[in-house]
Image (cartoon, rainbow, N blue to C red; front, side):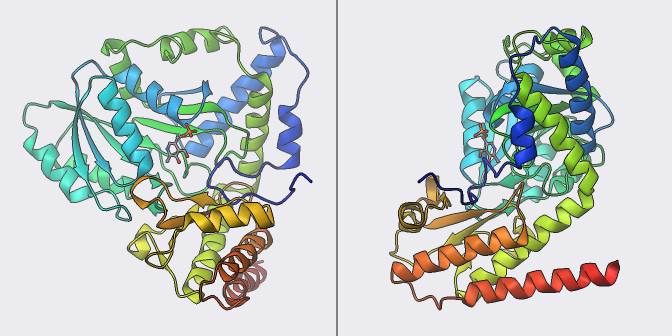
Length: 395
Ligand code: PLP
């Protein structure tokens, strides 16, 4: 049997049926007016979700990793200085990409479970009197550890240091599910992928460039072809594309942005906050600890849960998959075997979350962990019922 259970990995996320159908198009000539009629509304919708009013926005066949490369290759030159903190697998991988591009990375190593060290960023930027650092990387939501960082704080650090570096933000597992303020935070490049908050299959890197980042691209010397925003700009202006685009994904993206905006971004964020609150209540009822070390770091899209010392967290994921046909996220890198992750972003409801909590409870009990069946479910139910009461009272 092919499982129809929801997935609880932190992307790719569950896909609403209407979006799945919108992606499922017959072959359509991408040079026909139909593509333009999808492309431009999709761009407008994405910009509203990013809260981006300046600069340019591109969707490029690829994934979040392609988005990282688009950000770097278009704005930087060989040997440019980069400031970045490594607080999880994804910040690690973006740093690794910068090194492979021959960029000169000042790396701050942070305990996994911590957020970006804003004060340290400021110190290093203040000390960079010659302006060697050309870009600051910031992973908004570290999917490996379930940690959200303070991007407004990183912007303040740049301003306080009077430093003109570009602010490049990985919003892969936050955009469309948690508050993201391109304009207000003066983000220079924002990166995401279609398969997270936009609830689509994997296949599109989504990247917003500020006016300042677009200006930087005019002199940046790293080579780029496939990810060139100059080529993209020319293609879009001619109502087309520099190469063959996945038309169905663009059609799905147009619908996805319409759905997010119709629900209302604040409502989308509140839904994610409530669902995450229920999951954290369940973790607390199980007597377990999060990887994120402080409440202000708790992510509303992914929860990484530490298993007891000496217990391989990978067993939870493997057993859930094998016996209950349900997918959870494994621990990655430094926290491999130490945490398992519940992804709760994109198309997710209170009731879907309860099915994940109930399943993981069975899994942990099966594996001999000291879990009272129903304890996490009851704790989450209390959070979700309170949410319903509050909604009724507000109506
Ligand atoms: N950045 C973050 C925060 C992610 O969670 C991921 C993937 O999960 C990526 C980047 C890489 O994106 P992709 O796997 O779509 O290339």
